[in-house]
Length: 420
Image (cartoon, rainbow, N blue to C red; front, top):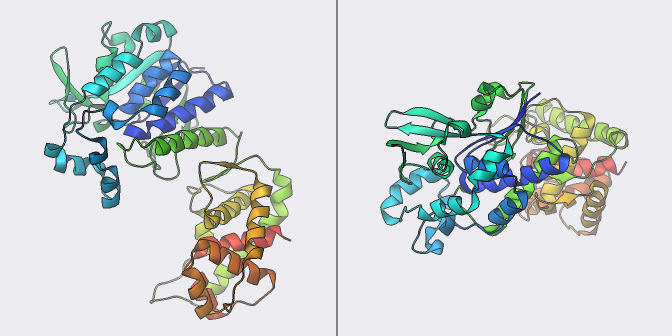
């Protein structure tokens, strides 16, 4: 049985891959080959080199100035890219004439950090995906096919996001970013006879949806975006690395959760509360549908159940999963960080104590809820939790209003369910 690790491209989001590597190391997973595209090619080379501490140190201190020469890193305006809510590549193409797309720092970085001799001696199969220009052809390249001393060039070629970065010339042929052809080179691993593949995505979606449910593929990926692909803010990189670690540990059953991360909890201990919680959600949504309650003429489509299933990618949920999602909706309303590991019972106690301590003068009706909603999700969580605990009935107008903020409402129902 041969197992391969396949790493996707994604710029600064590559810190997430280092977090998964830390988890795989703790889990004792062994790989026979590693394949990558773009930043995944660099991380694949580091993985084949076997220097996890060095990779962690690199990704803990890397800056945009180590990737490209810019006049002022503050002027690179990552925030401006994010605020425009567009893909970063069109932004860079539009503004390329104002930026110095000199990637000599990246070349230096690769030369300093990638030890080709050590990688060749490791015995692991290493492959990187590039794109041949102007032929417009994918060009997968294995270490066994590379001339001695050329690995650094192939890694740089795989990450050359043309036209922002220049094409890389190797033996008279121009190559650009392999992401133009295959951002997650699973096929390379399959062609090399790998029986089991662990793929690390850097986006919430599947690069190869046709493989998503295959029994030989295990995919670790974030549920939400990891930020801009040239955002090297150290706090963001640390967060991405932690999320990668947590997601890998959840995939292999060492930790639990979907969007959030929890230490393991006994499934039997959660079963009854899960059923109470689900019944409350279904009653609310069914009553909402029965009464035809809607605002602005829009149909209501099970808002609380939709909120529950949002992060679950359509998978069949166990009662434990239902309980975890209820806790996550509560955590989201409380504004908890997604890059931490929580003790579930402690988080429930903290949330219930917070809700009990809040004072509200508002009535449990449309006007009162509107006023509370303006104060944010925490206020809605506490307000609805108190009203449910006191057994107050929900009027039709209040139901309409509650349907507009389903996450904290479902979180409040969860707290009420676990309280018995």
